[in-house]
Image (tube, rainbow over all chains, first blue to last red):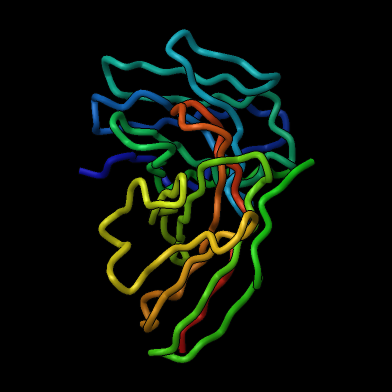
Length: 112
Length: 115
């Protein structure tokens, strides 16, 4: 089983749509969770950290369900500029520093 | 805004040759990392580095790989004898502290092509 699993997509949505991505992780001892965004052939950039209580940043909402080992990202009112690959990332317990484990990413394409 | 810088942006090398990928982490960061991404695949951890020594490495980071912080600003990844399967984008990253919720900042990457 992959450590961090995501639906690769692509998700093709019109501008203004709401879209949700899901991610599962296999290591129940994982402690820190993130969504990163990666544009084509560019570096990953942190979109938001994910906390157990859920958190929101503008149009973006992240949720964590530790019991199900499941992370989600909701994007409301999609913009053309949201088109990218969204990476679910987990930092495992016991690692020295940020040894991030990446999912394969979910590709989002927002169309006019 | 401070950023991690990597050079070169693209390196082409012949199989069996040594390559050195260079990174300048953000100046007040203490933890440094190398990741790689083979085209079309996920980002994979290679190694983390703190206080002038490797703190963790993955199974990918075998004896062909080494890292060094030769001075106060640079952080390098050396591949001694490149193989075709080393072709990938290599990302350097740095973070301020060890806490697991600390953001890691990535450089723009070096695309390594082994021919």
